[in-house]
Length: 99
Image (tube, rainbow, N blue to C red; front, side, top):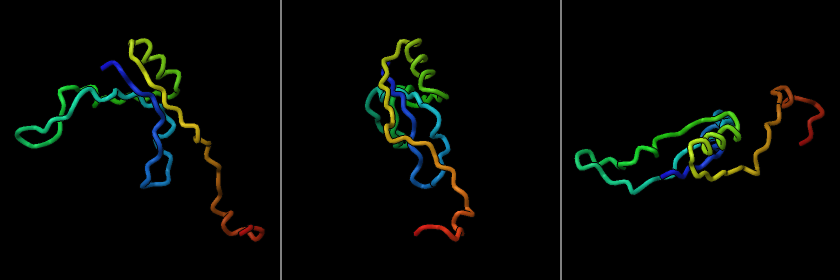
């Protein structure tokens, strides 16, 4: 129950923007099995930790929080993360454009 994972979320496949990919996320590991609710049939669990997602500006802040709270953490770093290259719309119409 005291196990968390710290990661930087990937961008969504539905849009090309990079919103919410610069923050680090700390989320708890699933505690137990989900069971269907008797009345509505929705999946639910008795553990509410799986509903908690904490956002941090830096990796160091997330790790410091996990250590301060006594949580066992798994740090997942993205080796393929690269900074975005600024582009200009006007470059599409340049005369010396290759290709």
